[in-house]
Amino acid sequence: MARTMEPLAKKIFKGVLVAEFMGIFGAYFLFNKMNTSQDFRQIMSKKFPFILEVYYKSIEQSGMYGTREQDQEKWLGNKN
Image (cartoon, rainbow, N blue to C red):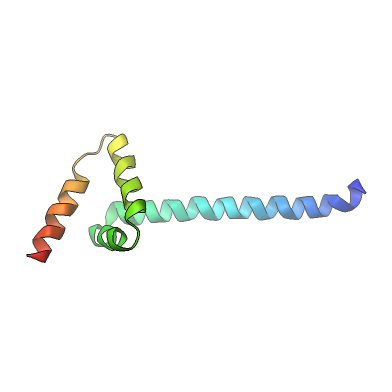
């Protein structure tokens, strides 16, 4: 019975591995896009504010301060 389960286990392992790589690539793409585009961060603030909050906390944790304040100043300036 162990022999018949081996190909299935390999397929499951490969599927999990591919899903993890896609998740890592997606997280990198999202972080990079938010890190380089203030307009994209504004879109994220409207659609997914919790993701933007994680972004702000992660860059503040790394010692980069002021991004949140710059974004809020620009966005409030655009409304007026």
